[in-house]
Length: 419
Image (cartoon, rainbow, N blue to C red; front, top):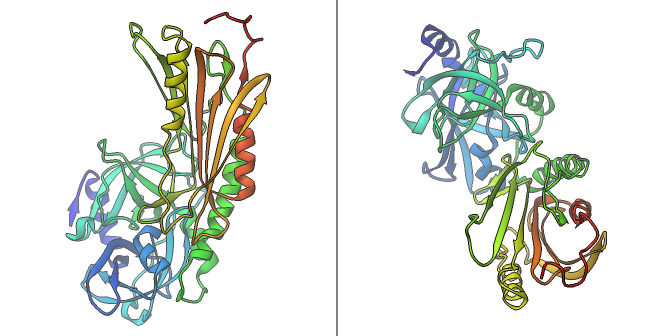
C-alpha cells in the first residue's frame, strides 16, 4: 500500500475500505485486452458499486464490443453489469454479476449531508494508480472549485490515471467524493465529484435492469436537461461592461466562466487590438474526443487609424474569414451556416450563425456565432460565441442574448471623425 500525507488516518482509511475497493476494467469482448481501467467501490449489500462514467464509457456506448470486469485488492475477479450513468457528473452505477463472489464485504457508507466538510479537513483518496497496485493518497479539502458550473470538490492531493472512480474518504472512512480528474499543469490540484451525486444515482437506479444496448438516448436526455439549466443560468446574467470607449461588447460575468485579456504592446505600429477570451472549465465527457456542455465567448477590438481605411478593411475582413470550424465527422453533421446583417442600438452588424447536429445524441447541437461591427472604416470589433451541446431552442436563446450584448456606448461620431 502506498500512502502520502495523512499518517495513521490514511492507514486506517485503507484498512477499513480495502475489501470494498475494486479495480474496474473494460475489456474487448472475447479476449482479455484492456481498453481502459479505473477504480470503483462497493455501496450496497447486493453488489452495487460506483465508478466514473468515463471509466466505462466504451461499454456504455458500444456494449456489443466490450465487457466489464472487476479485480479486488485480494485478487478476486468477476464480471460486472452496468445499470445506469450520470454523464453530467461523470458517474456510473454498476453491479457485480455474481454477488456471492464478494459476499460478506461491507459496502462503504456516505458521509451525511448534515456534516459538511470543513476547509482543511483531511481526505484520503483510494484507487489503483497506473495499474500498479491499490493505494491511498492523502490530501486536504479546499472547498468547491470556484467559477465552476458543476459542483466539484477541490482536493489538495495527488490523483493519477487509474484512480478515477475510486472513493475519497474522511477520517471516519465515509465517502465524501469520487476521484475524477487532476490538473497536470500544477501540483496537488485534483478534483472530486461530491458524494451526494453518487448517493442520488444509487437510490434512483439500484433496481434498474443491466444495460445491453448503446446508451446514446439516455445520455442525450441527461445532456438536454443539463443544457436547459446552463442556458437559463447564462441568459439570466446581464453582460458586464467591456470598457471599450465606442462599443458595448458582450463580456460575460465570471460566475462560471474564466476570462483572460491581451492586447498589442503600447508602442506597436499598424493595427492595434485588445482581446477578451472567456471559457467554461467544466465540460461533460461523453466519449474519446467528445466533450460537450460548455460555452466560450471572446471578442477582439481593432484600431486601424494608423493603417488607413483600405489597409484596415483588408485586415479586418481577413480576420473575420480566418475563423475556423471543426470538420464534420462521425460525431456531427456538417455545419449549416447563414449570414445576415442586423442593427443593435444603431450599430450595424454582420452576423454569421452556424449550427451542426450531433449524429448519435438526438436533439443536441453545437452553435458558432461570428459578429463584426460595420459602422466605421478604421475601427471595429469582432466577436465569437460558441455553445456545445445545446438544443435548437437553446441555441436560438443564446444567439439572441449574445447579439443583445452589442451596441454603441454613445451616439456615433460626426462623419469623418476618427478616420
